Image (cartoon, rainbow, N blue to C red; front, top):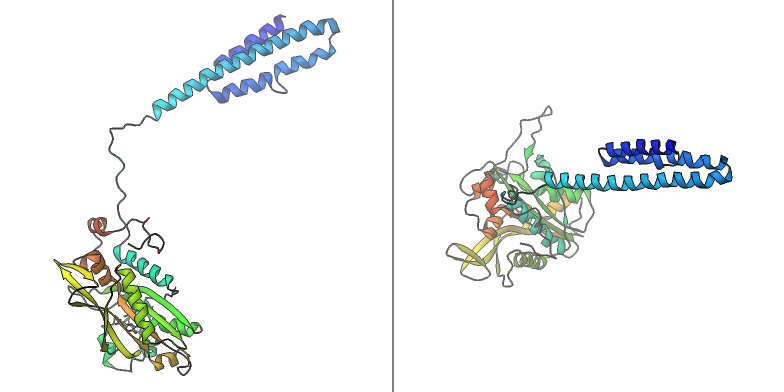
Length: 357
Ligand code: DAH
C-alpha cells in the first residue's frame, strides 16, 4: 500500500501549498477529476484478481475520501482568508464626509421650455424645429415683411458676410421662420409649437443678444380668434398654476398676422412677488394674431380654404416671472453658483402626470 500512501502524501502536500481557491481547484481536478490520478488508480481495479480487488478498492477509496476531506478543509481555510482580506480592504470609514452633491443642473429656461412643451403636447401640439442660421426668405419675406420695410430694421438682425453669390445669411430673429418651413414641407392641418433660440443685436438690462422663444401655429379650415384665446388662456392657467386667468388683447402690428394683438394677463405684484390671476396690473406675455393670407400663400397653402392663428412668446422672461429670477443677464452668465441655486435636477423632467414644476 505504500504506493497509495506516497500518492496521498504528495497530493496532501499540493493541497497544503495551494495559495488560493483557483490553485486548489487545479489540484482537485488533477487528483479526483475524470482523468485524475486517483480516478486512474480506480480504473486499474478491473484488471486485478477478484480477491485483491476488494482490499485494493477499499484502500483507494480510503485515499480518495481522505483527499476529499483535505480539499474541503483547505477550501474552508482559503475562503475564510479571502473573506477576511476583502473585509479588511473594503472597510468603510463612516467618519468621512458624504459624497459631494454633483455640480450643475438643468437651466431654468430649459426647464420652462420642457414645462411649456408638456402643456402644449397635452393639448395635441407637436414640436417643430428649424435652423438658427436662416435666410432672408424664411425670416422676413415669406412672413410678409415688405422689401426694405423698416420692420426688418426693427429686429436688429445679425447678418453674416455675403457668400460667393452675394447672399447674406442671418441669425434668425424669431422662431416664426419655422412656421414657413413647416407649412412648406407639410400638409395642413397644422398644430405645432416651436421652441428655440433667437438672436438680436441688442444688449441692456432687459435684452440679451440671444434669448428663447416659443412659437405656436394652428392652421385648419375653421380655426379662429376664439380658439386662440382658449389655447393661450388654458396655457397660462396651467403654466402659472391658477384657475382665475383674465387676459386682454391689445391691437398691435405684426406683418405676418392680421389682425394682430398683444396679450396681457391680469396680475398683482406684492412685495415684489408676482401673482397671476388677481390684481390691478397687466403683464404683457406675447404677440399673436390670425395668420396673414400672404403668409399662407407663400407656403403654398390656399387662404380661401385654410385659416389659422399663431403666437410667439419670450421664454426667458416667463421663466424669470415664474421662478423669481431678478436679473435677465444672470440667466446667461454661466455662473455655476447661480445655476446651483436656480437650476433644476436632471431627474425633475416636467410632465403632465407627475406635475410641471
Ligand atoms: N415673431 C414675433 C416677435 O418675435 C412674435 C410673434 C408675434 C409671433 C405674433 C407670432 C405672432 O407667431 O403671430 O416679435
